[in-house]
Amino acid sequence: MCAALAAGAPFIATAQSIDELPALAPAASGAEAASHADALVPEAIFLQAGSADHVDTFSIGAIWKMPWERDLSIGRFATGIEAAAGEWQTHGQRHRSSPFAQFGFTPSLRFFPDAWHGRWFLEAGIGANVIAPAYHTDGKRFSTAFNFGDHIALGREFGPAHRQELALRIEHFSNAGIDHPNPGENFVQLRWVVRY
Image 1 (cartoon, one colour):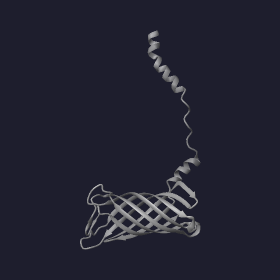
Image 2 (tube, helix red, strand yellow; image 1 turned 180 degrees about the vertical axis):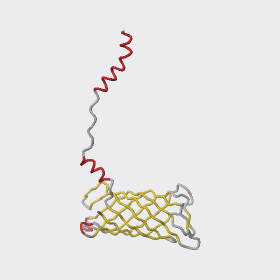
Image 3 (tube, one colour; image 1 turned 45 degrees about the vertical axis):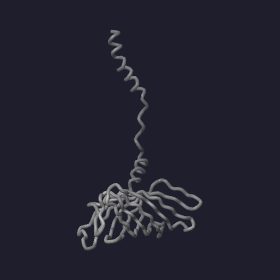
Image 4 (cartoon, helix red, strand yellow; image 1 turned 120 degrees about the vertical axis):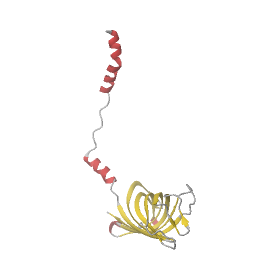
């Protein structure tokens, strides 16, 4: 009998420890669930067009506002994340007739200088992009489909409640030396954004 009790002791202890576990947290309330769902909805959509030597690009995308913002004596900083899909169409003597597909994901930092009265902004970002198949045109060939894209931009918000904006962007694509050749490509782009 003592041996049986001794053998069962670990199971009894386990049962007691399970009983002593704290109650599970209640499920999120409807308001909390709605706020989580709202975080998945982008705050804005955009259209963008640009060009470089022997190639034009067009893309569409969405922007999610991030919670980090700071007001300093010189102006306001804000952050965001964007996802984009687009195409690159080459032209030249040995151009590819069908476009290259581009998919990108880019975090960015935006600065609204107080001296510019709150509507003008500067922006910078760096993100990951897939350009498939690996981009090539007259005199230039990327060695990888994966590339980084970094940009700087100057823009201005306009309209009621600042719900639209135009921005002039300079964006550079390259694989940061992951493989060679790595000639990179530089675009001048114009972006139009509409917020919900």
